[in-house]
Length: 89
Image 1 (cartoon, rainbow, N blue to C red):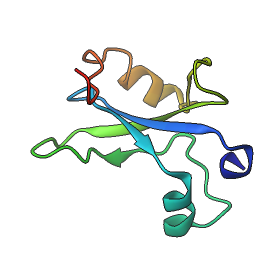
Image 2: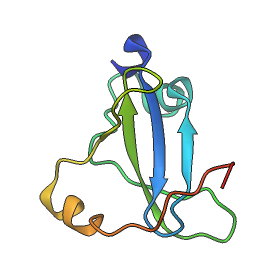
Image 3: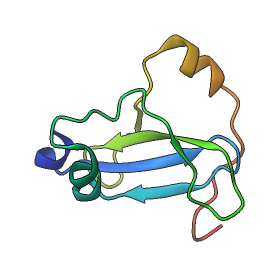
Image 4: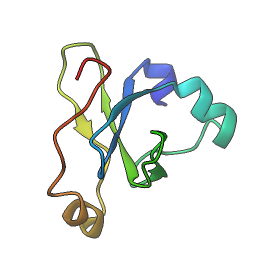
């Protein structure tokens, strides 16, 4: 669905704060077209970081980012996050 909508997707690490671009073509190739990113966590891809990442999505550049967490326990676990780190930070 997000691939068809051409949604922008990012992952954010709860430990190091890194924000990374997610290519939906890669997600679909790994998990199939019906895979949902809602409430999904993955290991951070930064070297020497063992944190978990969650997903965010936006319809357009400059648009509102929506955290793809709905499970109350996950929302609570990610309430306090480190500052965002990007390639420009």
